[in-house]
Length: 316
Image (cartoon, rainbow, N blue to C red; front, side, top):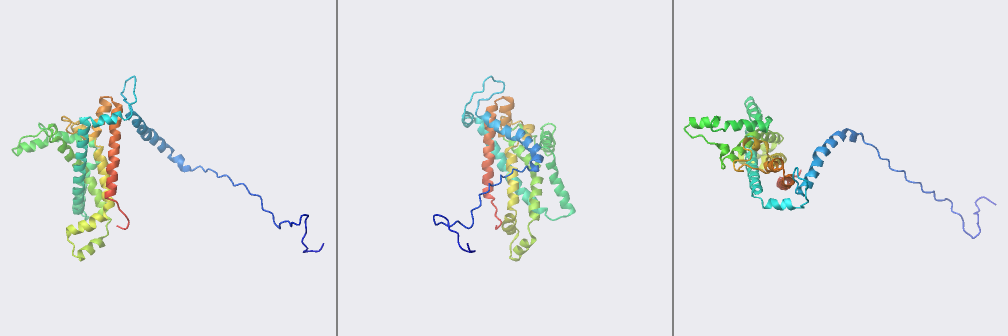
């Protein structure tokens, strides 16, 4: 046989020069243990035990006529939520909560922005004034509530003493059904004004000075600079401040409980004080859980609306 002559096999078919290699089994994907999970394990355990688990249990309670100490906790489905729609105290607390939130957040944003613009320049005087406004922020709401409850006392309070010195009769602010809620709102604004001012001040300092210089060269006045340059430039900061203040106002409890306890005649009752009363005074845990879930839904709804209003793009 000479080299190069093809080899013939019976049947006339020539064998292929190369055979297909057998398919190799794919290597199994190894699951690698991330050391980060080991470091996060304590925090995740605490989050699960004290946050996630109570949330799940509270929703389960809201579906039952759950009363502490009762032998039977019957399942009622959405019965607690239906009962809320017929409860005048719930609607009163909802209206008070919304009024407190709308007034306090609106006033805080306007006054905080005015103070931030007025105290924008760094000097010894502005630093002292900033510190004076910010000081109430670091004090607890309970302490502030006790102090203002004493200041507004009609017999021993400083406010009553000043009113009598000016020839006006002393007013019992916290026992008046028409003045108690405005008094609580005033104290809430006084407490958080410095916080809003500092946040908006940080946003203003991040605005390039060239924008204001270009606006003044175009003949813009002070109000036009605020409307067309300042406000659009600090939109993300305004969103953050508004969200934080709204959530805080909707969940306000310490200040109301210390100053008025929800009275007089439920004039300052909020959704959180009603949750406390129903759950820890009347022991109606299921009903209180339903109120808390309504509050959660309200916070989510208002937050989504604010995110829509203050939506921000990099091209803005």
